[in-house]
Image (cartoon, rainbow over all chains, first blue to last red; front, side, top):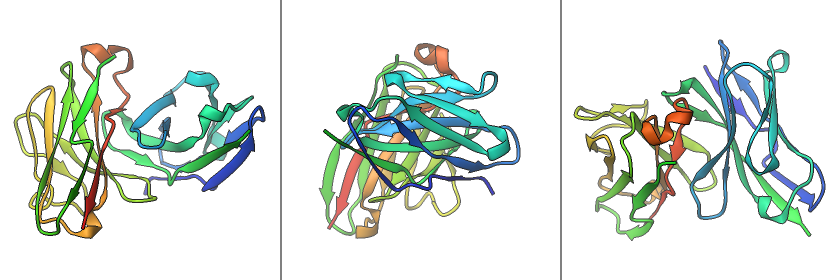
Length: 114
Length: 119
């Protein structure tokens, strides 16, 4: 069965430090992969997505993610974190792009220290 | 890009009652979905709202408990029926496709969510 694993439930970083959020997926075919962010009391905002092509994808707010097929991973990175990045981050896999159900990971809650 | 709104944004309800949540998009979209996010949990798909026909439910969700309507290409409702405290969650709609979202036809965009508390 398809699944998404985000091993880190909570991560705390200092403002200005680099960030990497881990995501591993289990899916038989080439997946459609997404990262969403949920700020407190808000809905989900799309950060970036990977369907095919260049395995390093750029998103909004200075985020990027790299698809590694050999590791079944799609880790999210940011070189310098801002206090406003404090939120919950969800990795998701789509079974046929966005036209079908998304399977979400458990989420990683990011705290940013000044 | 399209604007997705949900009403109500939050509500506190008594056990045994029902609540209908509305999802409105300011442009026509191809697909609409309803998700549930239980406290401290991730999102789980409840159903796909089909325009003009019965919704398609995921395993563990039934129409009697979560009736869904989608009368047109911009609007859908989710009703949480005969509520219990276990139904306390955030309910989110998402949409795919449409002219305003033409640049990302394979991507789901989410509404702001409805936070439901059942006492």
